[in-house]
Amino acid sequence: MHAYLRTADWQRSGTGSMSEPSFTDAELTRLFGTTAPRPISVRYEIGRLAFDLVEGGISQISFDGVEVVRGITFPVRDRDWGTIAAALGPVEERRDNGRLELSWSARFTNGDAHLDAVLKIEASDSGLRFLSKAKARGDFETNRAGFTILHPVSASGCPVRVEHSDGSSEDTSLPNEIEPWQPFMDIVAITHRQSGVETRCEMAGDVFEMEDQRQWSDASFKTYNRPLALPWPYLIRSEETLSQSIAVSFSGRSNVAATGKRPVLKVAKEAEGRIPQLALVLTSDEAREALDRPEHISAVRPQRLTAHIDAVAGELNLQPFAELAKLLNADVDIEYAVACEGSLAAEFQALAAEVKRVGLFPASLFVCPSVDRQSTPPGSTWPDCPPLEEIYREARDAFPGIVLGGGMLSYFTELNRKRPPLRHLDYVAHGTNPIVHAADDRSVMQTLSALPWIFRSTRAIIGRKAYRLGLSSIPMRQNPYGSRTMNNPSGERICMANEDPRHSAQFAAAYTLGYLAATLPFGIKVWTPSAGAGLRGIAQRDSLTPLGSLLCQLSRLAGRPARTVHTSNADEVASLAVGDMLLIANLTERNLQVDVASGTSLTLAPYAVEQIPFSG
View 1 (spheres, rainbow, N blue to C red):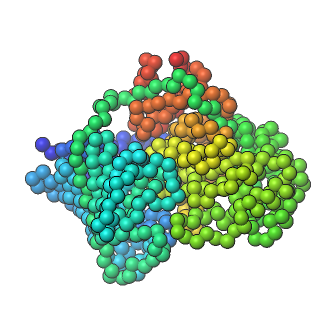
View 2 (view 1 turned 90 degrees about the horizontal axis):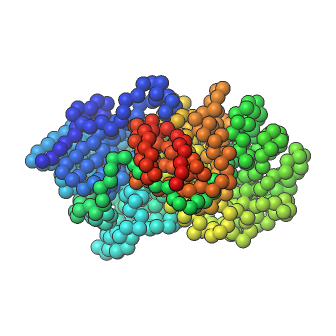
């Protein structure tokens, strides 16, 4: 008996199972900060195979109850690695003798050129095929156009067989630690075994390779077309046709014990770490904004303020930071993008002179070459830059006795590719961002499950060196992968956007508690979940955002021992225990019933963050 769930088109469901609850505009604004339409997700089930159809791709692909593929999509990227939105045609559905076929059209537009694609899925109870045929109308510029397969982060360390175009194969495993280069190249098929289920993916129509997307905090490994070693952007010439296919087959039976529908929380008996100190980062302009409305940042009372100074942009005014430091009695850490355009000694002496002029006493100085804010993919040529040892030496000469940090102003990805000489540093830092590759609500929350892999891999690089986290907000401050961040005036869910409506909504509060919970086992000393003002700040109009209100509470917990809380479903709930208090976040958009192993049960509203008493 095959159960089919269906949709008549992208905007309206037929007899299909719609996974999203309904909200009023007021509820949407409170939860997400926007009333912008959310993608409609429809679940199809065919025997032991199930998947979601959403926005021209499929996701949450499971077999025998095990999620074995996180998604298969056909993204088209612009020259800044932004995703070009597709105009999707209606879905046509055919069913015949236990088989399901779905097909639709997609038009991608870049300037005056179009890429017109026809996409088709053929599915049965043992596997599926995803086919594409696309033709350019005009010379179409892109960095990449074609299928990607996302293998779930839960497959980390699983056995895998990789087959190559020359007929060779290798038996290995998906990596545990995150390496800076692609795990596998020139792939025609990849088979992995997870939880008793074997999944084989065959690719045709281009050269495919894999990257470890945990680098960017994506909860997946990505197999994608067109190797990074080839030039980008490139042109698909007018009338040129691209044909690709992905075939996925499944076998075996799940060996995962069935769990109840309610997540169960189990609190560790011993503290595994301490709550890190809270830092808020500000540019000079944002510091002036914070001084104009000091009640917001005063309410949060962060232990640290991070002064973000961009030498290339000519930002060398520390007066607002000196005033904020006095107002809040907070330590000021300078993070400095080094111009490296002349004498390093003169550049750092100018910074030291400004520090002295305004009477600022920085607690630490973090330095990163400005050119290293742009990512250098594996195999690419590194930009001209003085050796890091020389930069660190000149920084120490200008600031004798300073606590000196290095690493990246951007993300773990860049730190992993350019690892600093640790003997010159007192601490290492990097940031994270959850909207590099995907910006839908589910994907953003799923990035929380990739954070432990990032923190563990960083610890493998830096050992026992002090570890801090730079800005890790949902909106992106600076784009290492293109020439700009994306403007978002309509409040949509956009990759690499400099403004994200969810940052000012309840969504960000739940995300941030989940983020903090992930840091506990890794000895992180400082975290920076938000800016202190501006687009990535803690207030909106005249009041604190839900994130700002949460940070008021979390700031007061800094330094206290905390216990990890293990959950039976980390995609749904995050929690940590401090003293006799349990903090719990619902990471989903639906009401969620949660059981605590001590016997307590509670119902959490969508994206709610709750505090309950706890003893145990």
